[in-house]
Image 1 (cartoon, rainbow, N blue to C red):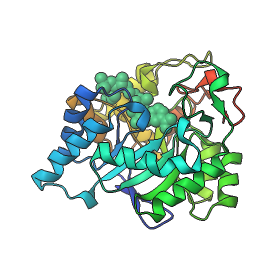
Image 2 (image 1 turned 135 degrees about the vertical axis):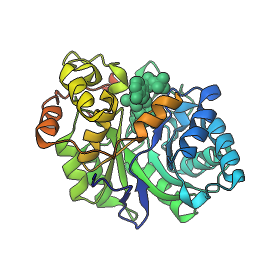
Image 3 (image 1 turned 135 degrees about the horizontal axis):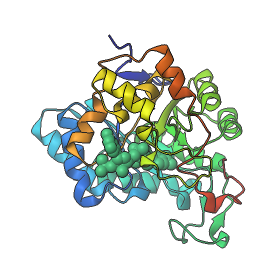
Length: 310
Ligand SMILES: NC(=O)c1ccc[n+]([C@@H]2O[C@H](COP(=O)([O-])OP(=O)(O)OC[C@H]3O[C@@H](n4cnc5c(N)ncnc54)[C@H](OP(=O)(O)O)[C@@H]3O)[C@@H](O)[C@H]2O)c1
């Protein structure tokens, strides 16, 4: 039987459910049903962000679910993220308050700095030219994040898309340690070094784009979607599973949490049913061998920013 734990312990005593529902590009009219369905079949971890523009509808879903009494607030783990235009220390608390209002919650379980680099407050959310860059240091942002914990607005705080040096700088200067680094992890970018680095520092890794967004990578090294690899399809047949289930199961072997996105009930269910079988060593080794270091989410347009992480 599978040895995958249902939750991973964070360095502050709280726990993060191993499998969560991603919601990037889950449109406002789809996400409410997706979240309600996911929670009804056992998901307890929902990942969103200011950038995704769907916090309000996720909040509507949470109100319905909590009203039904089937799930308590304490049972849920809700993550949202601070966007790059709001990295100044004094903007962080107002930003989390805005997210909480949309989510209709008193607190989030986890608040993340979405990316280490900042934009000016009055710029577009995804600016197209470097005049919108701001050089606010993410250490200043971290002080604002700590204030979110102090004020009870976030149970835990963490990072996303931070590299080793950036994590180290935060660790050396923080009062409250980050509990999570949310980074891209999939068979083509399995990140063994960064995962080990985080685990050695007691920081849990959450892997985003676990399904490689189904081949949506512009990296020339990208060998194509792992879900379409004939060998992975063969492994899936052996276990009476689908190729995405094999991929997600493999990622859990890395000791991380995963947040596959779907708005389709069949796929939401499929992505959750990944702990009732075990892969063998050879199958895991094969999946490991697909690591070509190709990114789906590179934000290459900002690569000349002082704090660009890759
Ligand atoms: N921190 C960050 O910077 C960052 C960056 C990117 C993503 N994220 C988070 O990580 C989550 C996951 O990443 P992602 O959404 O980019 O990519 P992903 O989860 O790798 O892939 C999502 C895509 O795969 C499809 N899909 C999902 N399950 C499937 C299945 N079992 N079979 C076939 N197709 C399937 C979805 O379509 P359907 O909806 O139609 O099923 C969607 O098109 C995001 O939603 C977001 O919450 C964070």
